[in-house]
Image 1 (cartoon, one colour):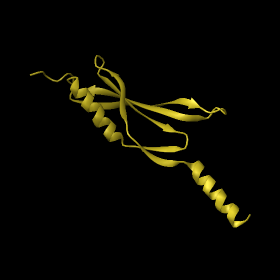
Image 2 (cartoon, helix red, strand yellow; image 1 turned 30 degrees about the horizontal axis):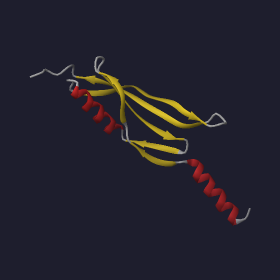
Image 3 (tube, one colour; image 1 turned 30 degrees about the vertical axis):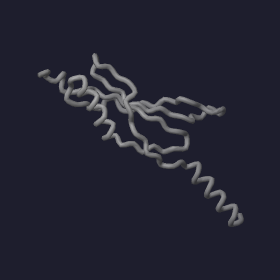
Image 4 (cartoon, one colour; image 1 turned 180 degrees about the vertical axis):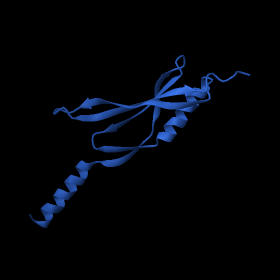
Length: 110
């Protein structure tokens, strides 16, 4: 194999390996009555998401506090669903959700 072919092959493999991409979790749903907040993010087929889960927990807790709770804890892990597939059936866009339970019971109202 020529040097030029090796270089091309190496570049193609690097491209297929995907790139680390910073993703921010955002509120995507929840229930004040149940005291739950759903946070999520989306990534593409060639992305390797890097997510600050602590920031997601902070955002979820902030939402819970607006409902009178004192904080939030993640429960149930992450759920991944394919939003868009290609013609071969591979996932091109993936949605990830994390469910948070509001904690501390409704804070005392003053």
